[in-house]
Length: 276
Image (cartoon, rainbow, N blue to C red):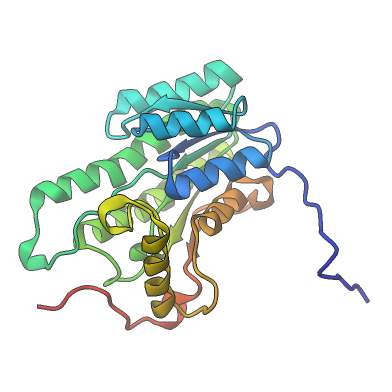
């Protein structure tokens, strides 16, 4: 009978050794955690982000495996340039992690703001579509590749985020499934990862992740979640993306990998939207 002792580590090796990855929104939050984790597992990573100072600092700390390129995902030419740079520098692109996104304000549908909606959709949906398009452009000839998009639990259940954000994340899930359908014949996998709230710059009021702010967000998330004693962290979401990026998931495509401690599975009547 097989017995595994907890004090004996199981070495899994470098799960992305020799692979080339682009991570949008990689300067901080979930993206930063993914950059560090992918590089740790042997990948060459390009951070594509608007946050030049933070992105460059992170890249320098992980050089030479990690480099930084300025990228506004709402501009197709920026996304195309990052993809072309990856191919020029490394000869290929194995992994495209479309992670850049914005949240928007929590407000009643009676106060719906069309301009804010356009801004959110431009980043969260159009930016993702540009990433999928240009990754596929260079992956199709190679007949392989993994494309990952960051969605949200708001893509599977209402009442868990602002209206515009929720609509945009439904769009990400639709994009993922459609692209998986089209690109499967080329050997390209397309999946998304859908986290619950994590204490990142996007989730913390004011955008500054102090230890106090982080603790408050984690306490709030823990109070809502089903899995107690385990606060969701950016690293947890990055681990999900690592699995989807790796060859261990070679037969996984069209999946929405929900990372929420079981919230959406057991708490279907929950809502965090304001009443009016």
